[in-house]
Image (cartoon, rainbow, N blue to C red; front, side, top):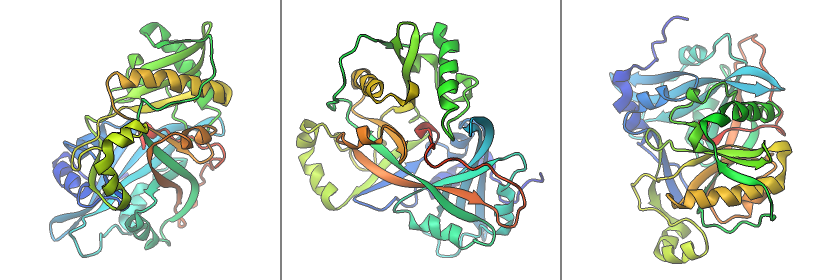
Length: 354
């Protein structure tokens, strides 16, 4: 494939970051999802193959997006899925972004089986940008997704148990990888985990295990990513502006303490959270145990679940700050290339990879 005229280089990192932070997602909490200190390098730290694109007008960088290609499971088979993300226009630029046919065609790769993107519910700009190019690509919503920001001191009703809960060690690596892939293979879009080294700043010691004897029955990792990508509250509005005044009361009700505006949130992702056979009781038990570990160092943690995830009813009952996202399948109408089709009822998107 020839190099795209839109493809970014390391020198574009600061401009990409500026565009990512040029506007916030609308709502009662105006949130910026950003990649400090260098947006280009941040994308390069993502697992899989990363390509970053920029659009220019009159020598000025006015738009950006990225494409992250990873190995995932679809229908129990290993496939390559391309996540199109970071689609952003410079909020101060009044002209069109200029992401035309050439860029869209550059997104397509012959060895990719599925393309998708996520759009925050209030992000109408991203939808408009895609809709202008319907003859070049089509978008179909395949799943809703909800991201939760949770206080680790939240109360969770969990059954009594005699299982062992502990931190993973190097000797657990082989067993853990087998568990992740055995359970993950049963879910569409779960990442193939050949080695933890494939995921930046993720280590065996970040994982915790719930064991029935010697067998893993649930696991998750506290994946710390704030070194290279962050959530920042730009502004509070409406009811949330009022809620900031009553921060101590929110903490008493087990909500997170609302952070100061313009400061990055400090938290771990509760990532690769799997319960064997989707056992809800064991999911609650694990969550109840892991929250004690989180509370030692953090005032919040983040997890995301698709609409069809078996644990959505559990998470929806917990006090949290949350926001909704729509997951879209992307297709290229002009192309004859065939694609895999994830089952919307089986979609599992790893929050640490969005």
